[in-house]
Image 1 (cartoon, rainbow over the protein chains, first blue to last red):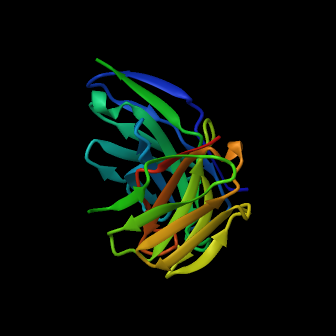
Image 2 (tube, chains in turn red, green; image 1 turned 45 degrees about the vertical axis):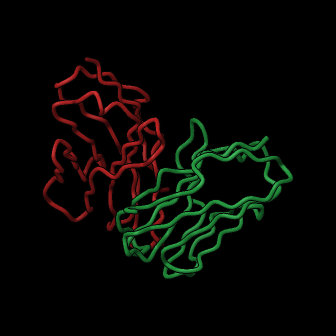
Image 3 (cartoon, one colour; image 1 turned 60 degrees about the vertical axis):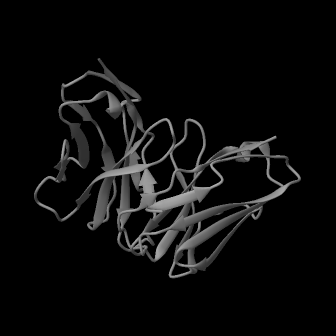
Length: 115
Length: 113
């Protein structure tokens, strides 16, 4: 079965500190992509970062980095120097090259940044 | 306009109404998607179109009818909906439907009375 699990329903972090949001996945496919999206209260799903299953280096995009541990099937998102505007829902998602673009989402983690 | 736009942003309809949701992408992509996000649930894929052809229908009830006249526009026609259909409906697009990064619109928040 293909599944994404986010075990942290809610997280708090102090402004300017780093935070790690957990994501584990289950698949027997060898070729897949892992994504993180941010969803503010306005509803829009904002793409943050992508990691391909064959990428050997962890992806980074500005303050976001993806800690990819393939053997453990984990793809944690690290946000450095948290800002108040980072308060939102964060979703981990997975897609497969041969499955028509279907994105499988986790349940999400609600991050609150405290001043 | 840039990115992916959706109209209307909010919609309230009765169970006997007929309405349509519109999505337009300005990214030059060839694949478009409809997702449903109910409260406290992960996003659920509804439909996928690749080069205007429907390639995925995720067992969606027939009261939801998609239409993709070209690669830039996607519609979701709604009729005789149920209150449990109240949700946020998100449109997305990607270069092609092969696992490429999907970019989402702001969503339409639908309430069925």
